Image (cartoon, rainbow, N blue to C red; front, side, top):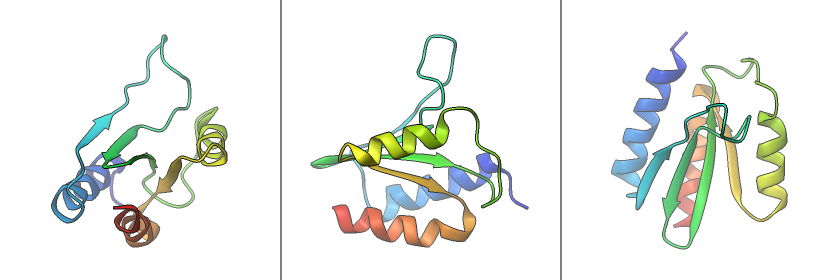
Length: 98
């Protein structure tokens, strides 16, 4: 099983090559930030994408992660949980946005 950090690094490299986002920001959790907020923000022309990376489909969520994904999507944003088994689908959906 691949480490989440390694999967995230490879996925973001593909994003930079295939989608050419304006920026890919890594959201760092701390005592003063929003608990459970997705760990990566991808800035595209005209929209932003929020991605919570997991090493596999069955990986556990920290408190608030599912709620933030739902809240962002319910409010018109694009938020995904991305793991190796659905990476191609997530990448395809992001490509559709640009």
